[in-house]
Picture 1 (cartoon, helix red, strand yellow):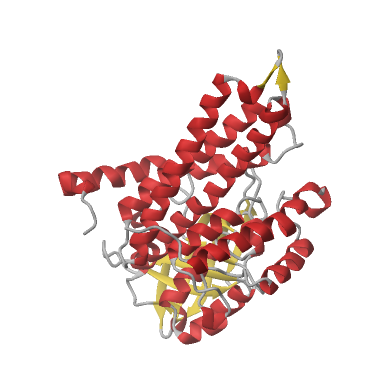
Picture 2 (cartoon, helix red, strand yellow):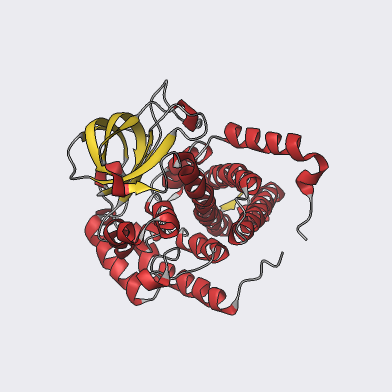
Amino acid sequence: MDFALTPEIEALRRRTRDFIAAEVLPLEEDPANYDAHENIEEGVLARTREKAKAAGLWAPQAPRERGGMGLPITGWAAIYEEANRSIFGPACLNCAAPDDGNINIMSKIGTEAQKDWWLQPLIDGKVRSAFSMTEPHPGSGSDPNMMLTRAERRGDRWVVHGRKWFITGAGAAQHFILIARTSDDPRKGLSAFLYSADQPGHRIERRIPIMGPEEHGGHCEIVYDGLEIPDENRLLNVGDGLKVTQIRLGPARLTHCMRWLGLAKRSMEIAAEYTQRRMGFGIRLADRESVQIKMGELAHEISVGRLLVMHAAWKLDQGDFARKEVSSAKVHVANTLHKAVDTAIQLNGARGYSKDTQLEWIYRYARQARLVDGADEVHKMVLARAYADEGMDYWRWEV
């Protein structure tokens, strides 16, 4: 298990760091660069994306032949972490959720025709996308087998009825991946489909208000009332919907962690800058043992998170699903992000609670990390089941 970066990826990592510092971080300082939902404004985003393309830092996860960087997942880890030093970074490099996960899975399993009409505009940055799976009670959440939205076959088309909610990015998405029930088979009862926002038979019921800040397109509730999808827009085979979710969600969870590590490091960076210059009772805050202990804990937790992420990325690159490795990373990094920004706010005092820094933005964003793509408790159940199945081999070395 050699996690050393290749010289090529290390060079890209440094270029990403320089680009974020020069072109993206300064944008955070001007309120005019934010949209109504506290993310980067569309015109500013478009201009910065053109700069990223010109710098050769566009779509790290997408195949080279379709305009991306074609990096291995271990390479994503290095680039995404640098990108999310800025709250705007991932969107500027086209590696923000949910487009990031959708680009990855469509590159892997889409037909060439599907890649041409659905994937290519997404890689090019011309459209956005969403992954429509989660449902209101009593439908599916962390358990896809509870899914109630149904797709019934009528000739060469599928007709969809049901309801989804908390669908990230749906308000701005043109292209959607939909998971729906096509039979009552406990293992092969779900299927995956592609559709576009301009097709009739569905509507966005509401953009659900959240603590925020929000991704572009928010988190929406969608009603399906007769959406018709041609069979050629089905992903994989009928009954492979659960397989599609497994292929997509493992890497997507891990890319969340990669980005969150960048935000955790940014939080620590803001705390370090302030404590090094702030005086109190005749001493710098940075010289106080209590502050050093807090900063040391953060450095430790972030380092652990990076190793967990890189291990899981390495296993994914070997073709493994890396289920327990991804779950371990997800739990640890989500909590590390929350701890990092909470500590940074505490060390900055009222300044950290204000909008004079990015900490309050990151703090509100960080709370969702312990929920999205599986709550902490669900991932801990995954780990417990893996241990029950593997026993002492749970900690086996790779050979």
